[in-house]
Length: 133
Image (tube, rainbow, N blue to C red; front, side):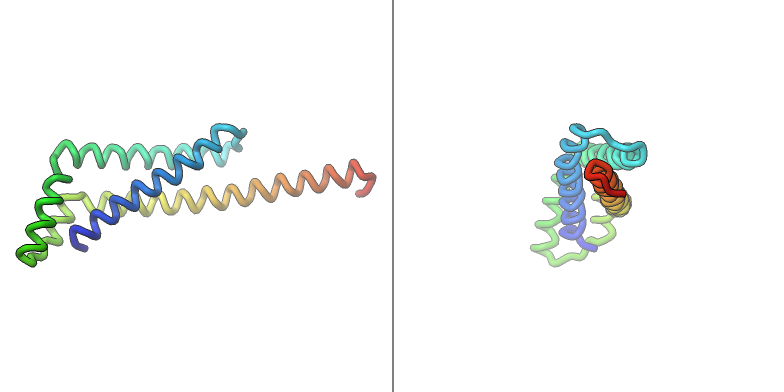
């Protein structure tokens, strides 16, 4: 993967974080099951990992180096894949993306399961109120 791919991976990470934080606002307004709370906690840990990685890269000046090396690549047509991987900690970015993908899939599945439980309980209660079984 080249520098632009690494940059795209970083952008994907921040989009994942943004999407989760939008959902988190809703989660703070409702009562969560223990299972959902556990998933949310794990996602928050990954969000902190993303912020830590970005902070580390900024402190090391890697983002400014990235822009410089992108220019060098465009002008000299040099392939700097290994350098880019080291520069951006690409494996770290990819690892976090994979964990976030898995956790958000777990979150979606848990949301579906809890929604099914709520609908089932509502139907059961309606049947009782209406005198059915």
